[in-house]
Amino acid sequence: MCADIRSAKRPDPDQELVDMAEYVANQAITSDEAYDTARHMLMDSLACAMLALQYPACTKLLGPVVPEGQISNGVKVPGTSYQLDPVQGAFNIGAMIRWLDFNDTWLAAEWGHPSDNLGGVLAVADYISRRNVANGKAPLTMRDVLTAAIKCHEIQGVIALENSFNRVGLDHVMLCRIATAAVATHLLGGDKGDVINALSHAWIDGCSLRTYRHAPNTGSRKSWAAGDASARGVRLALITRTGEMGYPSALSAKGWGFNDVLFKGNGLKFTQGYGSYVMENVLFKISFPAEFHAQTAVEAAMSLHEQVRDRLNEIDKVVIETQEAGVRIIDKTGPLDNPADRDHCIQYMTAIPLIFGRLTADDYEDAVARDPRIDALREKMEVTENKDFSKDYFDPDKRSIGNAVQVFFKDGSKTDRVAVEYPIGHRRRRDEGIPVLVQKFESALTTRFAPRQAESIRKACEDQIKLEKLPVNEFMDLWAL
Image (cartoon, rainbow, N blue to C red; front, side):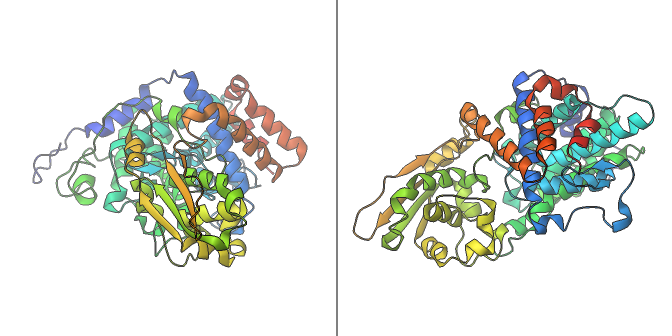
């Protein structure tokens, strides 16, 4: 800790930075479950990326910064013909993965989407591999990618367990930048000291505000913010690898460090070290592209569709019970101006399946949202906190994301109260969820690739051992147009 604000003596690095760097640089991952889950995370994330390419709002942001910015033998952006530098490659891949709010999720004191880091991991691994091959050296393998992804998940998720940045108005994408910076530095050949330096830069960057996720400012920046954060992590890793100095008390410096400036004078809290816990317990968004606190509300509403679809005009009220975080983040009334606004409104995400018996990315677009039945039903909804849901949300042995939905009619009748505690993407429902994830993956491939190319990609991903041995550049070539 930096004890005297007047002293120019350089302190030892903050212990938090040391612990993260030790994990990244020196700790082996031994969990087969983590690697298997990481493979499915890779498939799920790239499925999300392929689906995002159907939306011009996403594709207009892709490619080089300027038209002349493509490079030969550069990072290949899946589903496109782009070849880019690793920083812009990370932005492209990360924005695609995140665009539809359909990739994996981590919920704790802070929430976020650990697979957002995959943009930086894939870009750096592809860059290194192509450079190595050009210089007669061996490329990285997909085992290296999965290891890097496990460590990114772990850093982002373990920090999030006890530290709520949203409560001081900061956005969770800062954790993506921090994790990507650490792991990318190591992939680029950096040792523990280099990783500490890169981490110090990542924390010094502070964070964007959460205002673009909340009314009245909700907008599409939330769909590319993580790609931007992962790209920034790659940029900081490259800067660090030039030998650029770090800042040992980036967190704890009195008056000037992250803790005092942005975290109300509080230090970070940790209840466990780093391993593979986060990847093993990560939540997949498999069935619905919806903010995760509402996933089980959507599932409950889907089960009620048959009972209410022909009685919409008879509805008196709809009661939604959710967790405290759900109330705080996605309980939203009034006009919803864009898709990003709608996919963070629990009332909207519940109304669509009640009315239509579905919830897809297209349901957030204006063509569906202008249906007057949606807002009419939203006005009849009551959102309340269920204390038990909140309690189990934070229970480390459960980490449930419970919601309950019940519909009441004007004649006094009512539906059953349907409560769902664990969404299909939860670890407790892996056996049920993984086949649906694979189906999501295979369906997404058909939206972008001819059958032969889609089959080549599918075969590369279906076998754990074969995938892990595959050179990264060859894997990325499979996805190029």
